[in-house]
Length: 429
Image (cartoon, rainbow, N blue to C red; front, side, top):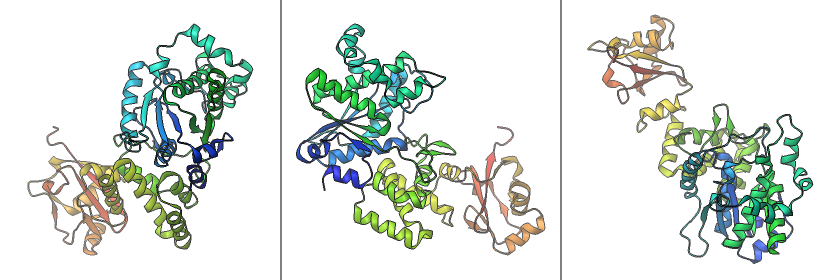
């Protein structure tokens, strides 16, 4: 299977220039994708182009990740209805550093034959002289040509309009392609389908300025079965940075994939081959309740982004909600897992030297029982657990020392009802 065959089978080819299939099969190609440094982390929506570069490298081609330190100071109007907020040089530099570290998990920068590169287009755009740029680049583009591009057309007709700053973005991206062609013999640009106009403009500029041939290939913009943008949840963007989106929540995002989406996601976002994915799809059709495909998807992507140890912690954390134990989980893990579970705070002063009666804790601080009688019946029936420990004695007293890391209690009623009790300060300190 050629790279193009693989991309096509995985549903990653939205459109391409005519000769790219043959060139990818017959030649060693250098290709690039641009990443917008508007944040210090990439997000799951960035995974599709990252995986495209990684697949390209595995097939023997050379990948370049262009971090838009220059164009990031301008802003790309593609897919936007309003002007982007401009970033400072310092903000862009910090963001680039974070993005570089994340790309290292996917691309091999030490490969002998075809090492990956990360370059910053501010290296050439930051020193370009305006008059020379207008003379050498601007003369190759008519305003009519630029206005015909969908991303520009949409903004021109909107109430917000488009500034000259963003209007010039197409020229800057096209010039990027020329510079990469000159420096690295780069002949292919990849991107999302909303970038098609910019990519074609770059290929045309190479033809006009250098007499060379360049190609473009665009990936689909991924949506879920409900038709909404991939990577967005009620809680917001799903980031690759564990400080922004914990590995547990990242794992849960993939685990919650709709049955209608999971096959496509396995193709797009994992290294699994066709027989494995087809087998998982068949399992999902035969026994959807097991969600075997979703579990495999979540495990594969979490391992790739955060490593195997974080994946294993996420799996253990996920099992807690389905009756698994709390051992080996930190207080931070549990707070993350039970973020949407009802919680309350109890000052440490509320615990006597010999603890707090469990009935008082359940009735007065959790709401899991509405009366002392109901709480007693809950204990007598074996339906109460604190920090995964069954409480069988209605006279049991809960000690501060029993709290996980001295911070919290996980109180569980029956199989599915939880309440998180956090310990507050003692004597107001």
